[in-house]
Image 1 (tube, rainbow, N blue to C red):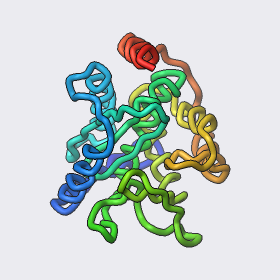
Image 2 (cartoon, helix red, strand yellow; image 1 turned 135 degrees about the vertical axis):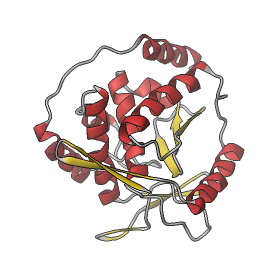
Image 3 (cartoon, one colour; image 1 turned 90 degrees about the vertical axis):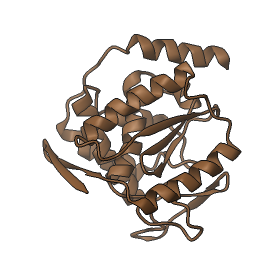
Length: 234
């Protein structure tokens, strides 16, 4: 099922999960659970991320056609990815990397944007959904990285599309849409994860944000507590 909701000059498209997508996501989730240490769903960090992510997901997908699940990986590196069917993974290192809750919301909104844009609707050769979309860029073969036993695809056009979705989600949620650009600029160029600090992507995002005003919002007490908790653990 497809739902289109007009927001300012952008349209967010929420797509219900197909049986095939759910099956492929479950297969990928089993690999992740076997290869990564994962925080318990009852852990306060996990509960906070699920709450924040769920709120963003409901704002993006007004009809709630997607069941959103947010899982925290016990990894100090700053990254996040999605495997389809509403399953989004965030490394706890992102909690200490971000400067504020708006930047954290931007990371989650970007991953939600991949789901809404149907970037995981094509299975890989192994039958497991690629965490980051299709296998080619418009300009040629897409760079690939191994993330555990999964294959990560960096597709610039898909990243830009997810960014466009994210800034409108942030606006509706009351966060500064410019938070995405701020956190993107601080991330390293290249590397094993898809938040590449790509100059082409940064330029495109700057152009998308031209019509949005920047504003500040106080961090929630929950964010402050969780960020302090993770920092103390490290």
